[in-house]
Image (cartoon, rainbow, N blue to C red; front, side):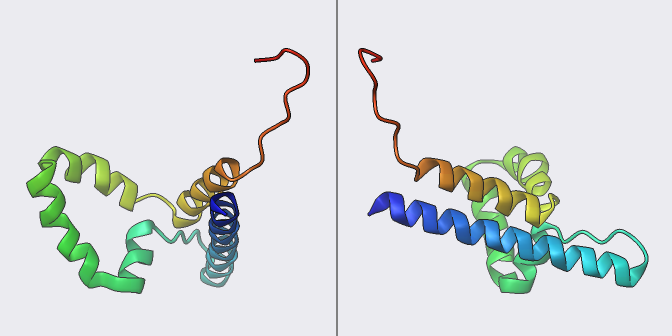
Length: 105
């Protein structure tokens, strides 16, 4: 059951990453330049208030160092790359284990 959920979540993340690649590509073609949707832009499109509420929580619990270089770097990453990596990780976590052959333990 858990493997099924991990694989389903992985494939949904990969599908969303593919859609974002298509979206960025058509936006780049239409604008005659490179257009990349960052994680921050995607997060603000979905729910901007949660991103504003997350900053004080991270700064108070983990410190300013975690927010400024670490989390802002994550927010600046292309959203399709982040969703693609998460999708691959979830699919790999949800795969079936190989059967052991012989004494390979």
